[in-house]
Image (tube, rainbow, N blue to C red; front, side, top):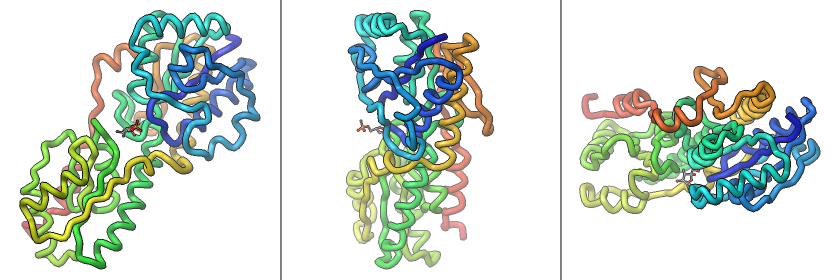
Length: 325
Ligand code: F6P
């Protein structure tokens, strides 16, 4: 194998740059040229390629975002565009592609794999919602940001004896809400996977106050509803409660990646190149019990679902339910 390409696509995540850097450095180590594709699958269709050097990647390991830029590009579902991407890669003599991103990017990779083109995916999304793997790059950084922000909010909440609902990202998955909620001892967590019961949340807030708590924190996944909607609905059940809503939004997707995200991005990027050289493709990388694993793209994306750590959610709800105390 002489030349491969790498792209980042979909919502960015911390650790994408670390993954690109590992692909480029490992390629260099094995004598393979690595081309960067700018703006994800859009750039693949348009031939927006540039040969990357190790100097292009210097110090990228510590930076958030993606220096290859990213784009949401639903048009890649069209077979015409998939064929154009294949033509571009043929024209540039690119023999394989490393696709870095979330579920949308993996669908793009799957479409290329369906044509028999060699692709390997690296899961990078703060949502942690890729089937098969227990962990996606960016999740650790985003979760720690959410935790730090909630810690700050709880200081001011306590001073004023207020309740706060903090909306974290996660359109379809409650992982960020669960982990940030458990890490901050939130009074309640609301996730898309469990039907929300506002009466019960209000009951839990009141029970906490009766047990002597001076403030309450509710962590809400964006997939349930917005913080503003939550406050409105909450006040219909508890009109006297002083409650505020905060939406963390894109602050969770920026900043330097944590050590965990950098290390796993590096492991995955290097392994992806090794596997391509060994003739393996049509797979994506993942982590099970701290070890790297690979998953068949077509089979896993079609037949498996991502599951949140429901027991963590339930544990937090049990620990913070003060009614029985
Ligand atoms: O990439 C995942 C994610 O951050 C989701 O948590 C969120 O719903 C979405 O992207 C936001 O997308 P955008 O940045 O395109 O508004």
